[in-house]
Length: 415
Image (tube, rainbow, N blue to C red):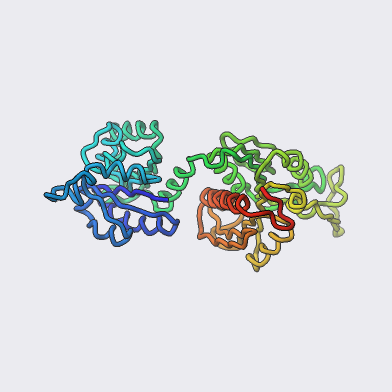
């Protein structure tokens, strides 16, 4: 995908060079557009070297004021760039450029490009705290939000002007996350009905006590939210969590592994993709007590019996549906996940080392490897769970294309 990076004249302009590298690592092609003021803080040559593409600094020719360089091509270049870009990102976005965007002023290449493009737009403001809090700036922000522009809220902290408060350019990960979310607003999953499971299950010992695990449900809820944002019809089957259901998602509440199995089975036929992110208990008490078990001095043994393996059960009867499972591991992560992929007849396994820092249960970030049935392994860096969710859905779409363009192999129905 092609991103046009608009750089405006603020102290934070140097951070845009670091942002280019991060966007490239995400697989994006980046072309820089700089305002005249931005060139006072950092040179176009820096962005040309980083992106490998010509940096646009003016409406007429390579730069404003270069006599003899204007021609028909340069005169309509803003239209060409507007048509070929997949997203316009402005970082940093000064109060001046926000005002131009909000009021429809087109007096340089970047502001003209904004009016000419129909691609998603993301702005990351950076300015003095008083400028950010000024009623005019806040009014312009609201105008842009009302038009569908994605605004990355600036951070608070010590500013270059010596003041402290809101106005510092947001962190690069937050900006990249906003880029991905804006791109996925294209609703590329409108043809899919996606079933998602999330959260833990609770297996009762008696009316007071139960066996469960540490799952918060955050990963599954992130998948459900991302799929809904991208246009899918989403059914979320959730074990007990403290999370609010994402907008536009049908949530079905369950408690035990057997309740989750029943809910999944009754809805599986209506889905095209099933993503099983729930941490379903592997065992349950064989003989739960109908009354509270009293405390005694003598040791007590609890007999456990296995629960039904929902992923394996669906794998045996999936037909043309695409099946995604999760593997939470503490050792030999990729090896165990690859075995699970084959044993459960899944199309994709999301493997994560729950012992790694910043990954696993109850974190807002995750570190996963996506192992696909066609042999592709994709190791992802530490990302927010929302970003991981979109990467999973990207892989689902990729596999849809692979299976559609290949004849069915033994044991794998054609889609």
